[in-house]
Length: 70
Image (cartoon, rainbow, N blue to C red):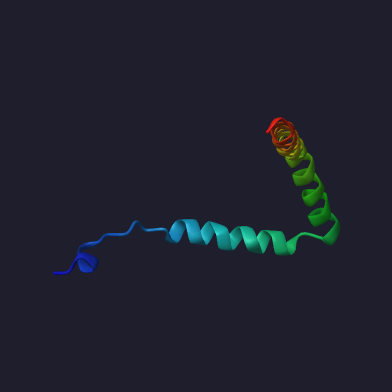
């Protein structure tokens, strides 16, 4: 028996079924409801994007300061 034949994979059919139902539920929403969900996601992501931008700015400032002293 080869390694591939002995390998056991978990049953993910329930996960796939939930994903399929979620896609169908999203498809049933009105355009306005879909837009509202996207706006809510944007609001939830805003603090993460601000933190990312601050890290990038700090990294860029550090690179500029490091380049001046060399």
